Image (cartoon, rainbow, N blue to C red; front, side, top):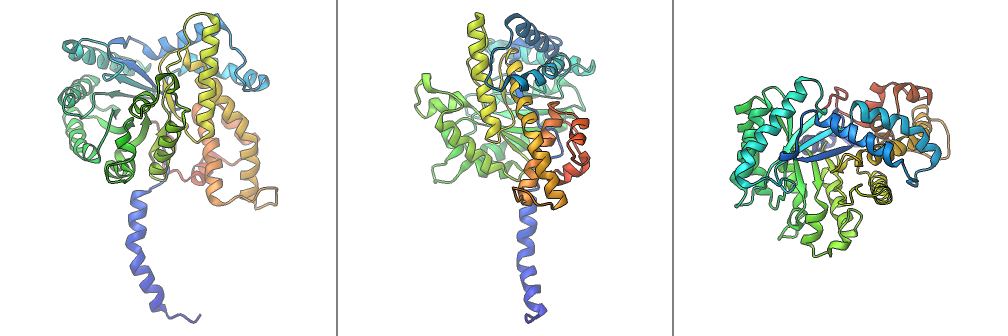
Length: 408
């Protein structure tokens, strides 16, 4: 060694604060299970036993119309279909959002009653063990005309939901980082008033949320302003496309403009523990068998496309969309397991193979396996049979914080 210790000490002194700041801003993957979807249900359309009702409606649609060729491979679909049926019968909805914003169709003077009723029904389902693992509400935006109405609905909903339950608040149409900063004390006050634990999602559906007037990437600033409370950025397909002047016939989650926004969202949340979330399709599986099959093909293609691009969660707006959500998702993770297992085995054993993986790739491979386990696409026995280690090792490889999957 030729350098004196003072050089090393000075390097540590200068970079230690940088290390600490980076770890605080980018703590890594959460231990929580990320749902594969968020189901939006208008506040005036919430019914008792909502999740079970969606599952029953999905199974009825599957029995009535039969599953068309979704382009996923007949053998793979044959593997996953029994799992999909079991999922629809036991846990059809992983994440529910009561919608008091764009999806809500009640009269303005009825919103108080509708929100209170919806919260009471969700609370009753939770007491009965029938609620989805994750629930929450999308209220109106913090823009001037809807600000007080939105916060009032949050206050009413959380009060009726009951104490001790975690919930997710989705803030739509965010346009400025200051809205995020101003909203955090509101969430703290709601937690204190109602004894709830609140996570935050931001809906990225305005151009200003992606690129600010100063040329900065606004969404990145929003992510770090929100801090550890933030669990997701949700892309609003149609509001965002319309704001860019894209003709209605071409507004879709696979439009290049939507892809750009979602890629920026992925960059903004990478390493923070929050997730970028795909939007919805308004092509619903309704009508004749031909129309339902075509809507299912569209939905399955978009779900698969999003998964291939690293977007592991999207919106579902109709019970029959659950069929293609789970079929496409299960097919994706089951198809990914053999290669992920082989490459992880090679990485852990340092054996020679056709691919030389680095730690970052090992993290991604482990995360794919864990996501498949979380949603039910594969089970622990299949993972063990593939030669992979136990879940604790996979959690560490994936960079999940200690604690393991715990729901939201």
